[in-house]
Length: 368
Image: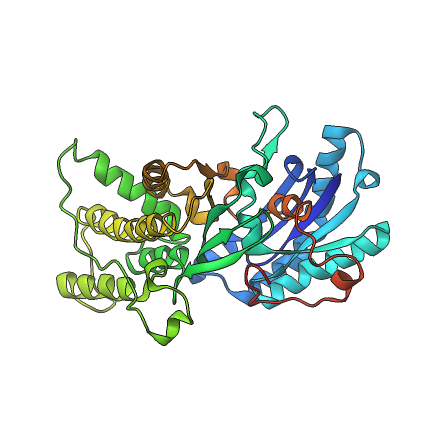
């Protein structure tokens, strides 16, 4: 079964076609990074306008890619899938409208997909010539970690397609914490990749010596606080205090104000220390969550899962727990439509007339 997926939840306009939930036949992503760089973050008005301008061309390019690989175009598509939440409302609307129109024009069913759930499907995506992907239904129960610019959520999957949040950030997501730090330190946007690179250079330059890291806080909420909303504090985190600690450190050490200058020689240590605090939190909460029950896998998805230090640390955590760590290929870590089309093959809680009648849900939660 071939499903065409559309994704427009934030600042990527994407279309893909996936066969039987795992084999990617076409995958096109238009990224808006350059449009948002001058502002140091995503501007919703700019994002939605770019989606309107680009979505028809992105879909057309995906269809051409499908034809080049299979010799068939839209006639081989059996259903249309689309992200309807969570995300920016104005961006989601563009993708949902396009998907509804395409489904009606083709006379094919429409399937609504949860963006966070789809990130946890990315390790199961493969392309022609790849080693066959594992079957997701064979790895339940599993623990999932969706870690991106907008979300940091630990999710239990008793069976594949069933989701329950067991922990999450109480404020900023890990990706946002990286971006805000990069902006403060003058490293540009997006912050995650440059922080990862600078931290790698710092550790490589030590030559095996013990790092002299700054003791930034590790953001563990106190049990009983109302922000937990009934979740266990052991599986939750907070990054707002970490950001404040970085700001205080920089102000105290180098002075506050627009004329502040952070010596280039000092940046790698600051960056590595900050990244280590985020990675330590994610690894610690994941290790705690893996003790809840006998899981068959640790599944990690989202743009922050590209971080090299996080990948290595989660590998250690998974090995200690005796479970395999499933990570996506780099091209599927960020927002893309292949994950939407892929998950739609397995999870169809919003399909057909119900999907055609639905509106966007910017605060949609896994399992809803």
